[in-house]
Picture (cartoon, rainbow, N blue to C red):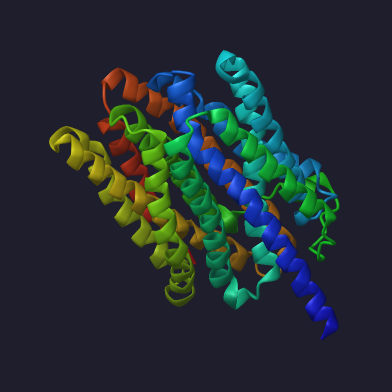
Length: 391
């Protein structure tokens, strides 16, 4: 009983540290697009190109995780948070005078940390939860991350009513990251399956092909929310940081309750049905993103796109079905879970990088967002069709 209580205390400490890490990540994400637009004055083409340094770490994280095979998941999370802090600090130091190369270095460093953290959080849940409760526990963990983002968005919304200086925001982000890293380094981490060499971190097997295929298509889907949805609000519809913070805040409030419910739905209905439903819903959102700014009055367009943005954020939680699916089909090969999650992240980000650049060019040369969202919608439909082959 005492051993069980000890493990529980350790996991509570891990959860607190991960909450702080995700709070820092949430603040960083809320500020990012406005920083590029308002401080560095990037256009849509340059914004699309910035997805290369932002998404490339999704691929690099697989190799960094492989090189750090001797660290368990909690220590790996600590290293990831320190990388995020270093990238944010560089961005703060260079500020308005940053060249695109300097900005790219900042973004690569911070994003590498956040991408390693993303896979590590899922892996910790997959290893510590009972198999039948993985989706439920992952939903609760995602809700914790959403609560962190919610707190960050609330802070930005209130703070920008009184102070509109990005420097103070980034100082807070660095401080939160550093505190989280110190906590993670101090925690006596639980045992995880050991990886004995770099080779064990690179797994490509035929039975995992459907998972990797869906991750590829959802890499394109991700850009619709993380880049072009934000850019539609910030650049086309001219929404200030305070309004973006309020929209993300609404998404967070809804997601806080929706994510545990989605985890329960995955447990009840299975990964295949949830992934297909996700594709159908996203297809509708792509149509609204594409045409609302042109066919609706300005205020209505802002409302429609903001609603889509909120729903898009909530639907992101359905990606938990892919994580629980790969953990389930790994079966007795528990040591495959972490490498497979990171391989999926790497594949997802190769597609994401490509579409970030292509989508930015499409937006620039077509003169609007329609083709960007319609092309992304085709990838969403493809993911739904491929999901039919999930075991």
